[in-house]
Amino acid sequence: MKILNKWPKYYKKDVVTHYCPGCGHGIVHRIVAELLEEMDLGKRAICVNPAGCAVLAYKYFDIDVIESAHGRGTAIATGAKRVRPDLFVFTYQGDGDLSAIGTAETIHSANRGEHISVIFINNAVYGMTGGQMAPTTLIGQKTTTCPAGRDPKFQGYPLHITDVVANFPGVVYAERVAVNGPAGIQKTKKAIQTAFQCQVDELGYSIIEVLSPCPTNWKKTPADSFKWITETMSKEFPIGVLTDKRGSGA
Amino acid sequence: MNKVFISGNHAFGEAAIRAGCRSYFGYPITPQNELGEYMAENLPKAGGVFVQSESETAAINMVIGASAAGARAMTSSSSPGISLKQEGISFLAGFQLPAVIVNVMRGGPGLGNIAPAQGDYFQATRGGGHGDYRTPVLAPASVQEVADLTFDAFDLADRYRTPVMILGDGMLGQMKEPVVFPEPIKNIPEKEWSLKGRGNGPSRYMASLILDTMEMERHNWELVRKYQEITKREVRYETYMLDDAKVVAVAYGTTARIAKAAIKRVRKEGVPAGLVRPITLWPFPKKILQELAQRVSQFVVFEMSAGQMVEDVLLSLEGRGNVHFHGRPGGVVPTPLEFARILYREYQRTVKSGS
Image 1: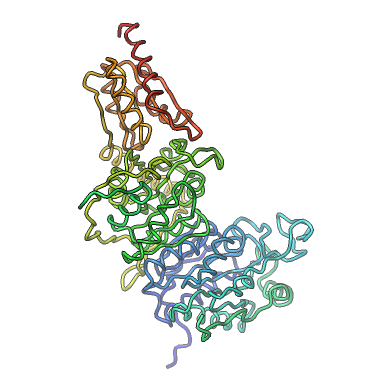
Image 2: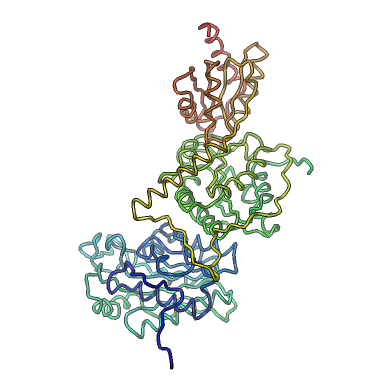
């Protein structure tokens, strides 16, 4: 008998998550937990979780987890990985955390080429605090702090931070994916697997940006949220590999 | 080991390495740059990790990561940079993670200047960052003591799982003195609580977010019990010429050195002056001051600030004795003669009042 699906070893059982219906976090959590098992990393893994919706990730991942102050995840990961290079260290961060308050930590950990893996959940809003404008909010997108829609004259433009760090020599792999349906989810898993493998192979820094639905704050149904990622959000943030320096000796 | 002639900033670094510190994260700021430079040169030779961070904020968070992963970790800065570290120090306290933070104080507020000052006393002894917590604060007064207290700070941090602040100033950092260093530590006890991957055991987490108010309160009281334990066991101070003293100076760090010279000077003029030098600023040495107040009526607090530790002296004395304050903020280093004049004047008041 072929087992088609089973509960991932490093995902806690009998726990109801606090995530809203249709949220992308649950999907990406599941992917991460599956990969930790399939790649045999769970026993030596440390997850640095953010301030943001995923602040409670330690309740779901059955691995060692340390919470970070808002935006500081990659600095904490740097400290842990430098003193224990044998550990597998990854951060799990949102767009406010990674590309607003943590911009300096993101840029410089990437530029140092720290041997860490970064999972960057981009849902174009501050989710946990109730849907305020994020650096990644699209032009014209309405949020509680740009109620008339984001106007670049006053609020600037969506920040493409993954594209920025992809240019750095120390960033071995950067890819933007989307959890907007079965195909996107499969691609997301493949991308995160590649990023994790970069750390296993001691190649350097890797980052996977995941366009992820936030139906509650987008005020859309889960199905419409998937559609909005496909038709609108991925026009601003095109999915695809942003850099791949594996094999270039970077 | 032989005596070496070394600056305070270098002594912080050498003592830390001897105490088993194998990770240092810092950002340049005067007057403590030689400490980071010493670590860049010597920590890798000892098998340790040196990272020059993009900011003081990043540095303290790297310390959090290294400490969580079980390493003895250190960062250092000077006043404006220490303000930036306060977010991380609050998290260290909340996570109950050990770390050693050196503040080589300079004049302030704002950028202030790069001269020696003691204006960060409140920040250091009241927690400094947000939330209900304290950090033990050690105040060396010589380069020898820089070495000794830095060595002890790592043990203290590990024993109580708390960040420990060493509060020096630009004078101590830049000054060279002969030092005998402690012998290097051979074995650091394994930190059972550290994150090292779950292996085959249960997973662990470190979180400072505790949404349940009753749980958060329980965590706060747990911290308080630890602080009570530290207050009971770890108070340190030095006394100087107190036996017959009628005027008692209270001063710490560099200011205490100057006060000692002033006391020597006025004693030649027949003024029975003495000194209490707090070595731990938190926990503050209350008891010795309370005991002295039973026979001494004149206390003089010297600080290189506009008056901060004087509040702890007043709180300790609980209304007993007369407390006079003399401070020089802004990076001005007072002279022994200046202090001597104050001590002389306060003694004359005692004589006149017949107490």
